[in-house]
Image 1 (cartoon, one colour):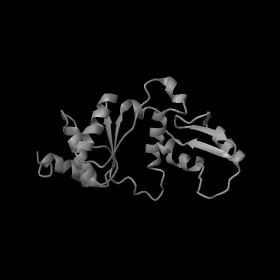
Image 2 (tube, rainbow, N blue to C red):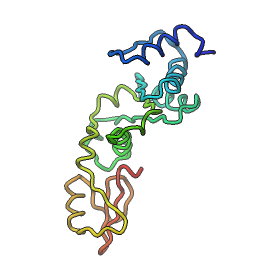
Image 3 (tube, rainbow, N blue to C red):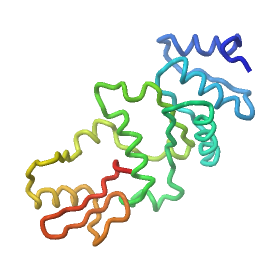
Image 4 (tube, helix red, strand yellow):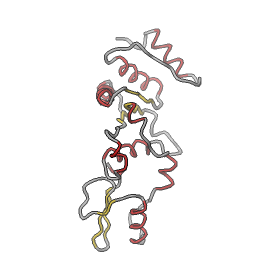
Length: 188
């Protein structure tokens, strides 16, 4: 299928390429066409795109298809399956959601011009911190920098990290003497 020469696709690209406000609704697509169109838009427009799917499984399939269609910067915004998961600071879903939000935390931008996020509606209805809140609450550690271990431990506890004997999940830390091991959520 030649998307470049298609009149309807050209109109969609033109409308999205302008600085016009408001959504562009494309409906009546079937099969993988919506994902193929999203991949084409990502290559053509070179700006972030949110590909919204009705269900978690649909978002998983969209993620796979977008990679197959050549989108290099495709991400999957995962959803928690149940409300009880929202409070768990050490789960991998939370870590992945934070990592995706952190892509937008750089005020200089540029990291996300080829970004396509496939997300189920459920994930969009669940909270994420503002990128500015991530920047403000970050603890920056640098190689060969001396820090007060007690201050680091206090920061970890105040930011809902879980103290454990051995690291297994994002959001955990362990202390052995003067060594503090941290499994940072954004390290996933």
